[in-house]
Length: 294
Image (cartoon, rainbow, N blue to C red; front, side, top):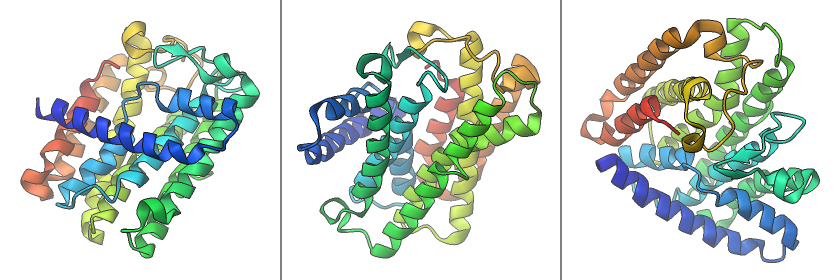
């Protein structure tokens, strides 16, 4: 119940902050604004901003100052979903239980909506109207963390390898690269940024990093499992479509994938024992990731 209440409360705060941010897009062309809004407010889980908030609060710092950066993480994640769904990539028709952005607005507007969300996310982070209470040093560090995770050596690099090896045999090393970059990188960055803003020391940041890597990889393995075994209505997107992709199911099978998932969750939980009682929510989030059905 504690985790459900935490999720509910933080999602409301994130939604409200995103709405406040969206006011700054008042002069944006209508169709572009509509496309951005359509995907950004499409009932997402908000895992990345929630992780940033949870990491910040686990270090004992209120997350109010962090909220705009947490929302920027969600904007970047949303851009990646819009582009990932395009015909030239995964060619998906359904996302979060409704038609994908390009199905509603066309490929061109969908691409540009993704571009806008990515670019505006970094504007939000450095905009004094939103982050004036955060020191310039921490702002720079946050931008570096997020840009590295989202860019060529992070999410985009993983996406490229995912495309290049679609329909090919691949290897376990290729699979690991894709999962660690395409999904894990931004989840790890979300945890790290929350801890950084809260003033985590270098040795503490190593533990937060380990936690982020474990739950990030676990999240993608669970995605692979859900694609093979999940309920399409619950998951909210087309399933059993990853037969040509590099997945844990392809390279390890269902049983071994579930064992690896359990191991990762256990490692994540142990990695933040140093936080004592403050680790409760982060540990519950890890267990949620390992047992989710959506």
